[in-house]
Amino acid sequence: MAATETKLNMESFRQKLSRLLTPSTSSSTTPTPKAPAHFPLRRWLFIVTGALLTAVALWVFRGPVWELLSLVGDQTAVSEYLKSYGAWGPLVLAAAQLIQVLVAFIPGHVFLVAAGYVYGFWPALILNMVCIVAASQLGFALARWTGRPLVERLVDKDLLDRWYRIGEKQGFLFFSIAFVLPAFPTDAMNYVGGLSGISGIKFLGASILGRLPSAIMLTMIGAYGLEFGRATWFGIGVLAVTVLIVGRIIVARIEARHATADDSPTDVGSADEQEDEDPA
Image 1 (spheres, one colour):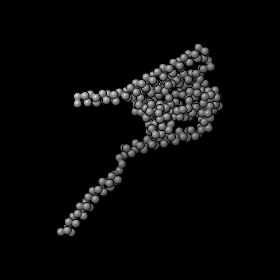
Image 2 (cartoon, rainbow, N blue to C red):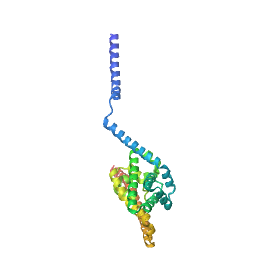
Image 3 (cartoon, rainbow, N blue to C red):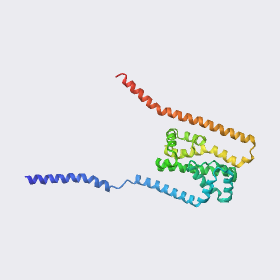
Image 4 (cartoon, rainbow, N blue to C red):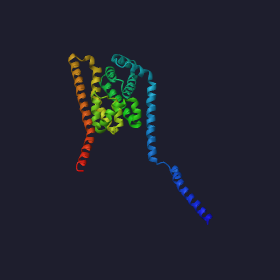
């Protein structure tokens, strides 16, 4: 009898052990669903391909580009440098503007003015817009695909915290204003847009719409600046100062409005809790 019970206990033990092991074995052998696996693969292939092409282009033009970047701040030197490369000048300028937009602390207005001086208004305006908008979309995609940890190495963390929530709520209108007004860190907003929920198409539209006015003005200064009289220069100065002041006011109001909006749910919640406590 004891032998029979021992045999039954061993059999029961084997069955339980089999049940415990079966799910682990089946889950390890179950193939991964194709859709979730293929999407990241395609995404990373696209990222790697784009990164390699960009790296190759920057490597080919590394000498001219770094020399051009070293001249930032001297519009005349930049213009003469671009002229020295002849037909290759636009490619050198495009690579320099790509780096300038991705590395947010490098000023880019000199390149826009120099392009207008070297190539004339309309060719330079088209070249400038294509370069800065394409670089802006690249920064947006970089932030969207890689996430915040990498972006924090390129942009100040406090700046991201400052504008992320506002960009998340306002979307197209906010980024259009951000690209128009000099009060915003324009190039850093590319990364803020990538981390927010705005779609790539809407961000592209905001980038084109917002960057066009400053691109027109800076390219025009480069193309016709020497022909401007004092009255024209005075008008440009007044316009620039007005836009800067208005921009600061708008930025302050946006920050105040969203600071109030962020605090209001807490206030409402505390008021509701007080109302619930009063009847008790």
